[in-house]
Amino acid sequence: SGRLRAPGGMDATLKQSLDRAFTFVKSRAYDLGLVQLLAGQDVHVEAVDLLGNHVTADSAVAFFVAIYSALISHEVLSAVVVLNDMSIQGNIKPTPSITEALQMAMDNGARRAIIPLENKRSFLEMPGDVVERVDPVFYSDATTAGHKALGMGRLNSSLGQRAKRGQSPWRQR
Image (tube, rainbow, N blue to C red; front, side, top):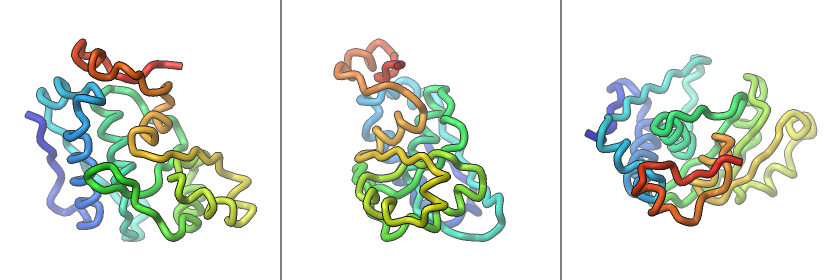
C-alpha cells in the first residue's frame, strides 16, 4: 500500500530523517521507476544503535539510499558510509563538520564515504590519517548519492519511458 512503518521507540531525529527520505522517495517515485513497487508494498524500517552510544544523526540521505536499495533489490556497496541530511524536496543540508562522523565510520570498517559536494573543502582540511583511510565519493543531490552508494551507472535520460515499462532508470556500467 506504499506506507512507511517504523517502530515507536526510534530516536526522534532519526524518525524525522526517515520521514523526509520517504517523502522524497514518494515524490520522485515516477522518476526513479518506483511507482509500481511502492504501490504494492509497505516500507518497514528499524534503526538500531549497534554501538550503544546514543549519538543522534540527521541521516535522510542514508535512509533514501537504504529505501531505494530495498525497493529495487540492489545491494549497497560494502564498507560504505553515506553522510548528511536532506529536505523533503531533496535539497542537501550542509554539515558544519564531517570529521567526527568519518572518524567513527572508519573506526568501524567504512572504507568509502559518500560525501556532499558542499563538504569537499572540509574533507581536504581533515587529519591525514582519516584522509588516508577513506575513499571519498562526492555527490550534489540525493539521487546521485543513491546511485554512487549502490555502484550503479549514470541516470538514464529517458526516465519516464523506463519507469512505464517497470524498469529501473539506472543503467549498469
